[in-house]
Image (cartoon, rainbow, N blue to C red; front, side, top):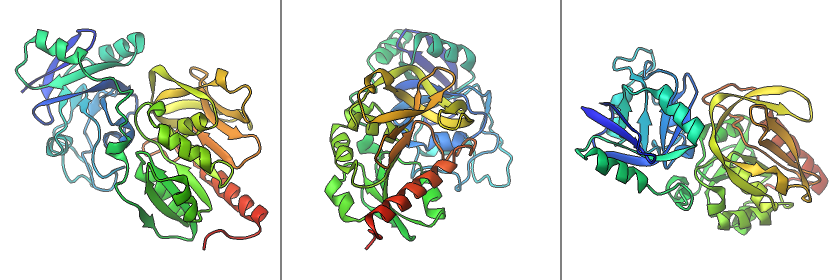
Length: 366
């Protein structure tokens, strides 16, 4: 079946449908990972977006129930060069095509994804629409131009957990679910932590009443400035409990501390982003998925410092409070997909929690 992709600049790509029938609309972005498409599909940070995979063959190892990063896919559409219809892997339970159809995700294959990626890199991220419907090209370009921008949608309502739940363990960590990848909670839980996952708008007082040893701010979708209520809650937590932020959590923490954020031209999405630790001088290859960054020029008079920097474009990739147990990174130390170079950051968080408890003279976990 014919499928078409239209961008807001009136460019139209013609290909084949390999997902659900219908129309999907959102912000068109690209991911450079060679593997990990299943984790990409189920990463809530992609909510509101149509994802292009730059690696040409996608779907060759199918779909399995062990690698999901959330309860369902949140992407609005999927774009590949070639979709494998006959996957081969011992863990495969279904094909990529059947998975997309089952979840109502519109997808297109057979287009020149290199050309599309060049357009996004040169012109910047843009809105678009994938459809199998019988629109004229004129109608299609008009619909693409009318797609709502990501900013202002406040997508956290769609991705956060509807209610609190707990992964059993000993040292209690509260996870503020802003669109959390399951791997973050698994990393903490496998290290022995009791992980209490709470909805994004949980008030600071309610979080503190749980008497956690630390608070994690998860990844998530959209413009961080849309989350004003959450920023205020984070501000109330700073100085009262150790905090570790990842991705959107990193951006919200910076806003809570008084810095500003801005939208990148085309973002960082992939598993090969080089980041330098400015403290140790070491370079780590990281997994990333974000379209916003901290404006370093707004940090000069604030009480936190830059600890990590992206070596491709120099953007801020990590911050540390100058005297409180609070830090964050823009990338994903839990990986999945991607390298585990940065997994040591979880141990840094554990060390901060222990040091904080020693200063307070006891265990706050009742």
